[in-house]
Length: 276
Image 1 (tube, rainbow, N blue to C red):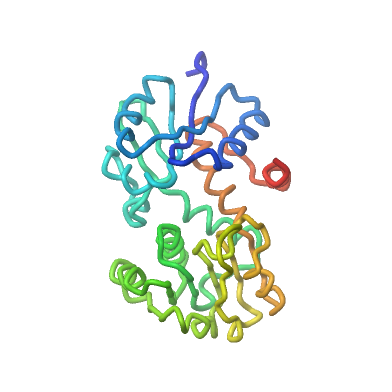
Image 2: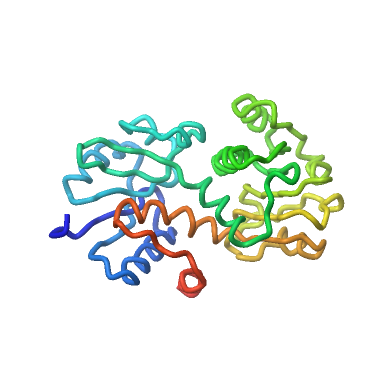
């Protein structure tokens, strides 16, 4: 492959908002790698045809985002155990033998963000997770993998939370959304996986009265970087971790697989994305 310019990209609809091309472009430039990473707007009806064509065009892999993260599992030849458990893939590899390999690095990015940016001990006590969408699946799977003893889950639509409990088992307990604040009592890890608090969305109004100062609190939202949820948690004395790190860390494994270099997630990377 040394005589070829390696290509990768991110597939979604819409896709113009994605920060992934900026991030991967920064790493390609930083490490002097001859390659490109491009945004690809692909509608659902065209997804399979596009995926079959990409390797012929020189693509070695791609990230996948909304609305394709679940669909690609059915199109892949090889699905990792963690992608199957989460029920979605965000990282594709076009193998030299022609097979499509699907993985999910969202859980890795979530855990690495907490490990690198807080004094976090997942086994220290229960986790409280707000939201039961696709992001929540990755968070729950990764929390169980690193040894969280109990996960308390609450979602505005209870049926979705109950479905996750059925899938992930006895360590999950479901709390009604109107009582979500109660599940923070004694929680050592607290995670907002909903879009509440994001620019253009309503605020996350869950009460933090029962939140202890020994909790590590994180928000997957990173626009704004400092959500009101994190601000309120910091005022309670908690360690807080913003959502940008998850975006950065989840991208690193894919970059390494496609371009052969493990990129460093450091302050320079973070500042580049924030200033772009």
